[in-house]
Each structure stands twice: as C-alpha cells, then as structure tokens.
Image (cartoon, rainbow, N blue to C red; front, top):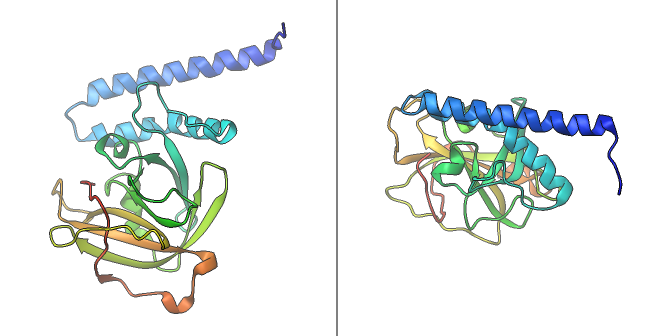
Length: 226
C-alpha cells in the first residue's frame, strides 16, 4: 500500500480544515443575514471560495463538480472582463438558486465555446452590475469546461421589454449574450426591462458590424427575474 508523505497529508488536512471553517462561516452568515438586504451579496461573496475550488477540480477531472454537497448547480464556465480587471464563474441554470451565487447559463442555450447562442443571466446588484461599465469593442473572455478560452468582442448593447417580446434561440448563430435587469439603480424587484450585452467571437468579428446602443428586440426562451 502506498503511503502519502507527511507533508502531503498535512496539506490535505489543512485544506479540509479550511473548507470546514469556511462552511461554518457561510452557514453562520446565512443564519444571521436571513431577511436582510445583505443576504444576497453575502452569499455571493462567501460562496466564491467553494465555486472556484469546484471549477479547478472539474478542469482536472473533466467531471461535473458541485461546490457543496447540497448544491443544485455547478460551475460550467469562467468569465473574464480584461477592461475592468474582473473575473467570475458561470453556474448551470439561470434559476434563483444559482443566480444568488453567480451568473447562470440559461437552460437550452449553447455551452460556452460551442456553436449557437450562449446566454448568461446575472443579478444587476452583484455580479452583473459591471455590465453597465462595459463598452462596445471591449473584450470578453470565457473558459469552457475543457479548459479552452474563447475571445469575444462586444458588438452591441441594447434594452428589451419582456412584456412585449418573447425570446427564441437561433442555433445557427455563434454569439454570447449577457443579460441583467434594467435600470441598474431601480428598486423594483422584477422590472420588465432587460439590459443585454451582445458579443461576437473575435474570429467572426467585423468592424462594420458594430452597432450603436439602442432599444431593440432579443429573442430567447425564458427571462428570469434578475
């Protein structure tokens, strides 16, 4: 039987103790914050430790790794915004549970790096608050579960009204769409407007395709409250 070196065992024990400690702190914070405005933001920040660890494990094992045992979501991609020096992990599903911890990949849309339309939703007051500061021409990087990076160029930003538009997905397109509630500073829990950042792969991007911000239509399957 192979025995691990003492130093390796120490590292494993230290990592397990740290994860246990963070788990306890997360549970305590959740208990203390329930019913307060800091609840969503607190969860989003503390959960990042587990999500980052799960992502690194999934890249190594090529398997789906949940950030904690009772999670109903898991990381499926990593987003980077070089112009803002920001990065974050994308979770499976755009339901309320996943969006509380990070941006979520909309069900039925293309996985990052695959052909089709990749649509990612996020809360306007946490992870996707930065969409307001992105500009046409900015680069967005996204890492797939295979470890490959895809580069996109922001080609359009626009606003849609969910009361008058239903969204459909075009499988023949290769685009990335980042979506959040609008206006950013509204106190309305579920406003009808959505702010959409659309980006094209750099290999397909043409300078002539850049548009000016406008109110326009976007078609998709579901529009969660974000």
